[in-house]
Image (cartoon, rainbow over all chains, first blue to last red; front, side, top):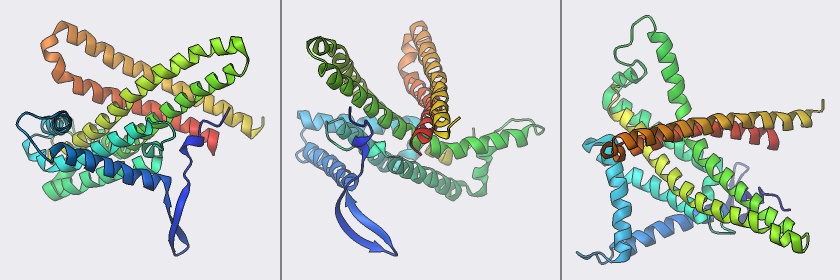
Length: 249
Length: 74
């Protein structure tokens, strides 16, 4: 049976240049990120190139996509959070298309690499801190001192709040990474069962029906997870940005 | 005991933590369903909150998966 982690290997497609001994290469991860951006742009352009009052199928997809994120941002952050709508829409689209593209056999899943998801998560948290301090100045740090807590236990509560804030980028990045990695490993393991069982002869081939059915079911589950994780990443981005805009608990 | 064997045992033990995440996600969705059946008209507005809670609970389970993977592959 082949190694289930083989699918996550990064290959160099074209070496580019090196600065101070650090080699920069064009890898399959970079290629797939470009493909993702190209797919998003092409889909949205095709959907809204000739807008009509009665939308065509593709235009309906684009409208549902747009309105889904629009409603989410408005519900969580309110009207003054709408200026972050382009950011949340970009993050949601990138993660969603990356997860969905990874479901094709032999395709590379960029979100199954912790460096990609961690970069996205750290960017979001740095933005939260920047926006919070720009909007509210030092008053933003009231986020760590919830309203109405007795003064005796305030240092204790503040320490917990600081730790929970610092664990946000870790959990935000690791959740997406872990879900995609674990899902693809499980799919590969069950596909490997099919191959190794059917090598046993005629009884093995009949026995291989069960892991095959399991793999089909898991593929459906993975499509659900791919969408759900993109949604969760986007809505947690909204929730964290809402803390920057309205720090009062 | 050899260090490699201890690493494999540690990876197995770390995976127990994911069971806790399973319990947490089950409690969240179970209680969401209980509430939704009692007051179906209020359910759609709270579905997002249920998903956020499930994601937060699941994230802690993912931590233990990452620890297991770190033990296995480093």
